[in-house]
Length: 264
Image (tube, rainbow, N blue to C red; front, side, top):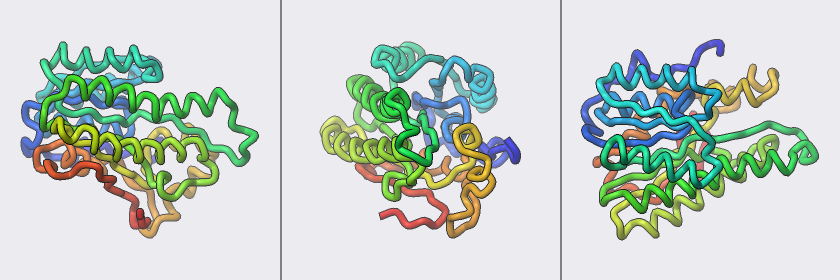
């Protein structure tokens, strides 16, 4: 990518906010997932990253950054569209770390289309299974094993509130994620588990040039009041807050990071 995304490698400085915590981040090989995994490690957390097998090379780069921070990284490739693999991710985190304190549902699939006729049943199903079903499978498996004080964080999107016409399936899943998180926050409150969403606006990640036409990529982010896309590093602090004990009274919330675009 040109320019390369800023994952916070040279800028994020931890202060022990997540010391001793065990975390699981899906889509941790690149983009927002890598930035979150890096920040968690620099705050003192061990991290399991989940990713597709074809992203192994990128995942190893993330793992190196986590280990340089002095924390453990477990890399688990596989397809989160299946409930069995989602249970495996939770089980593997607990086997390696002895517990699971934070789950970040971040992995997502999207494709851009100018016509409904271009969206196949297969693609629609893949979008929902990757973005919504996996979120449910992982949250269900994690909540059964988490202790009070734990946190589930999902990456929603500004599209949950302002759906993009060319991202019909993707935007619908982000609305579902936000709604589901609000329900789970109420359902899991008595167990002491907090559930929240982060709603990014246009962020410069590998997902953008790989799923959008060149003309859209060229002007990506310029529609915001800040006239630019965000960098993954500009999201790190929000995830850290929601994962940390400092966010102990934040649950059922959606925190927008949109470059000035109102989110209501």
